[in-house]
Amino acid sequence: MYKSIAVFCGSKLGNNPLFEQHALELGKWMAANSIKLIYGGGSVGIMGAIADSVMQNGGEAIGVIPKALFKWEVGHQQITELREVEDMHVRKRMMYELCDAAIILPGGNGTLDELFEIVTWNSLDIHSKKIILLNSGGYYNHLLAHLEYSQQQGFLHGDWQEKITVADTPQIIFDAYEKDKS
Image (cartoon, rainbow, N blue to C red; front, side, top):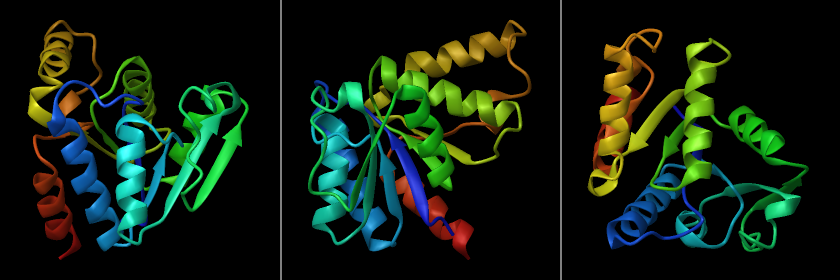
């Protein structure tokens, strides 16, 4: 079904150990299902956790990192391939082009930027890739409430829930994948 999935997530681990746990579970599952990880190229935070999990479980990971962030996010040297690009715009576009679907894990401003850009592109029919928001420990509850409010106030084209699938655990993603395969 999916040959590659872009995972957008934080370059920090955050305060809840569940965030890292879910990244590790997702990485292990991707490797077991021969799904290539496309991600931001860092070796730290949730980014590093999922990349390490994919690689430790025999999978493939392609990192895409802007030159300006190479030292900040500590470019991962133990992945299948690390592509260094000019800037964030090139990074996001390349990640979108390389993936069949996207999963968004907890993260900060950069993760939200990536989420909203891919959702906007989906809304504008620039692509129609599946977008899954992993709401680990309710991390995105406030954002989901805001999306609902934005829709109620007439600012969204269509139903946001048709553009974003929300899963509270990695297992929900795994189960949906198996169901879609059959």
